[in-house]
Image 1 (tube, one colour):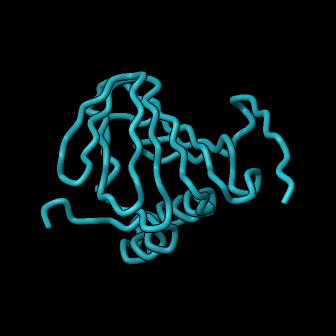
Image 2 (cartoon, rainbow, N blue to C red):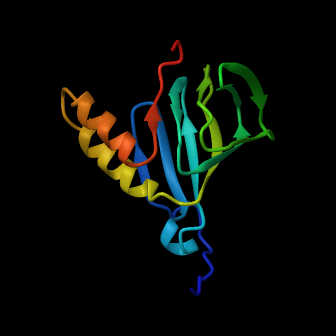
Length: 151
């Protein structure tokens, strides 16, 4: 399979805006033959819930701010310039305690069509009372299974 180069400017990516964060595609599955996806995340004072990926590894690069990661119950606070690699199967989540926004680059390997996940999540959250069961099913379908951190 031949893969074409991708040379994007900051305005080129597909952007998904949520109350606590904005995530922008930088390189999508179709551009890498499914090898990986690369995203830019801007997050306010918020938490990405504790979850696990069964099919993909996640690499997170802190570009701005300071982020608290929880991996397998262990807490790590990392400043800009830090990189975290979370192999599939490890429970993890992260928090920006703010008040400033944090910015991260996230790489999912192999790609699992996260753009489709974020688009559908936006539709599910666009109603006054989101259907939590539908959101949980969506997360599971796109390898984002939520885990109770106290279990």
